[in-house]
Length: 382
Image 1: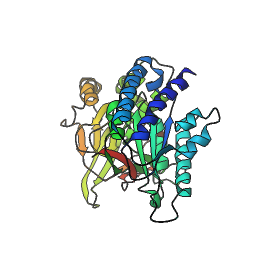
Image 2 (image 1 turned 135 degrees about the horizontal axis):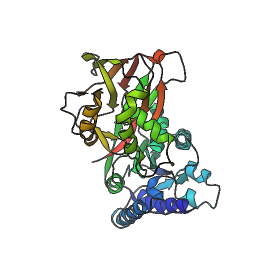
Image 3 (image 1 turned 60 degrees about the vertical axis):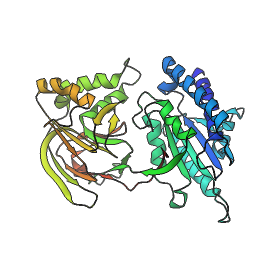
Image 4 (image 1 turned 180 degrees about the vertical axis):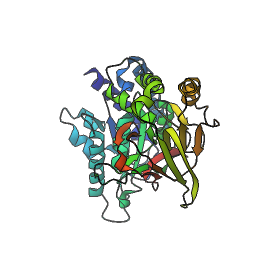
């Protein structure tokens, strides 16, 4: 109950910002806030106190300095989802209640937008703003649904991902104030790609899989799997704990065999080919990306990083370099800029898509990781 109250307080200020935002001022704005009440940004008292202060400051600024010329309103989806007093619906707020609820809500919003297309070309079509307030799981669900946005709605949606989880690698900014800047200052629509994993196997349940931050195979996927499995049972930052455990024991749990790598650029030209025993391979939608609650595995503009297997003492010695982003120039790290990577492998191995793991079997290989066309409508400051 306390968590729902925090989410409602959060939405009151956010709704004020949506009412005044300069975003798409020439069109009717329809907003929806999809919030996970169990996210750390709401449940961790110290963090919520900081967020509350920032929200009040930004809401006050929006009310006093921004005069939006066009109308803004909560979505019909949000209003109809409120089975209580109607207070949450009036704020455009929908708390998530179950796994993949965020994805189902985005699909409902797409249906709503399709039904609300103007009959005459002279009328301005509504612009739908989706705001997610949760961790990487909430973001992944919403983005996966938004990836399938029909072409006619391409310029009628945007998503703003607020960092309200314990892991916020998929958010639009790591700090709440930087993310809210996109709402209270003039911003423009920018389309970003996903990373797609396709398997060679015949199992229709094995993909294709999508990631919107980093998709990876190997040790870090094992860390993600164990972190998710033990969530709620281990105190503190369990991801970092499992990094330490995996450094010691990963190669005793999963056989590390030579991995055949072929990398291609956007024109389809092969730019690298090698076979190495790799502990992990990470592929981002761009460089300068983090995972595991801030680990900078892609510390520069290159979007692919492969890390070689090494003796235990060397792992322990170099672990800090890899968790702090100082590994880019090490010989053990293979850094590339690529649009597609083909991977051949002879053993079962885990993959993870923005924190969601899946086990790949021998028959799933070769697999391909590739950048899709830019399809996710995001915001950037003008």
